[in-house]
Structure formats: C-alpha cells, structure tokens
Length: 175
Image 1 (tube, helix red, strand yellow):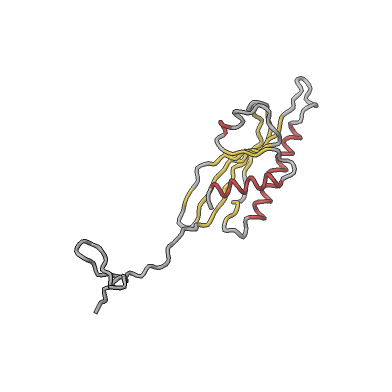
Image 2: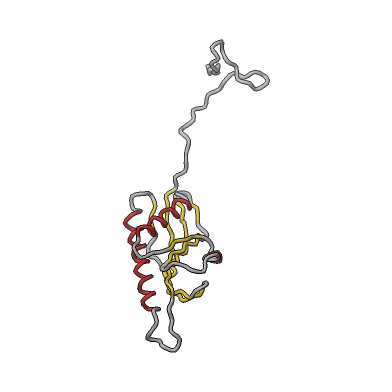
C-alpha cells in the first residue's frame, strides 16, 4: 500500500458518490490555481507527514470537503452556509462509512475516530465545508526474499566462478 494506491481509492469513492462534482489532491496552495469556475461540492486531499513503523505505516491526510457559499449581503436568512455545512458533513460521513466498510479485509483501515472542523474560507470563490484529519493504517508488506541457502562455489583467483565441462557451477563441498 502506498500513496498512489490510496489516492486511487479516494478517486473511486468520489466517482461513486452522487453529490461530489470534483476531486483533486496536492498542496492546498495549488488548489484551483488555473480554473476560476469550480464544480461543487468538491473533495480535496492533502498528504501530510506520515509514519513508518516495524509492522505498519500510518498514512496521514487532510481531507477538505466543501461547497460554494452563497451569501446575500445584509440578509442572514438567505444564506446556504448551514445547508453547505450539512451537505459536506453528510459527504464526510459517507467517506467514513465507505472506508470503514471497504478497507477491513485489505490489510489497511481508517483509524478511528476522525476529527473534523467546519470552516468558511475563500479560494477564488467563498466556500464552506469540513476539514478532517484522517489516518489510514496499512500493514507492512515488505517484499522479503525467500530463505537463501548459502552455497559456496570454487573460484578462480580472479574471482570468477569455476564451471565444469557442461557449464555448471562447481560447488565447494565441506567435508
């Protein structure tokens, strides 16, 4: 399991979710740098410092789920801030359920509980949503070579291995 595999899983989740319109990943400062018009609600994944241990890896991410904020100046009753927060909370809840249900048999899982913070921010447009800190724990899957039985060969003084007439290597036999 590596970052590439996890990003693919995030994209699969987003593709299957009926409400999500856009998914991206990378540094938050690079988000939406080129495109002014964005499709909402959106999911953005920011890899964070992670840890490697003897038997497992902890992959840490910041997950941002957000929607466009339509504020009407001077009229607090014509705001979608609470609707957008509720929507992004539902998507975060679906994300949590997806990972809890999907990852149990694959050697990695979403660490519980997931901490999240509502936010109201401005990229190129004003947005409102949820920011969650998640950790996905993955079992170590080091590629260990099979047990190597030491075999000693007869060597020429140059270091080359001696071969017999059939071009088989000549093993040194202990007596």
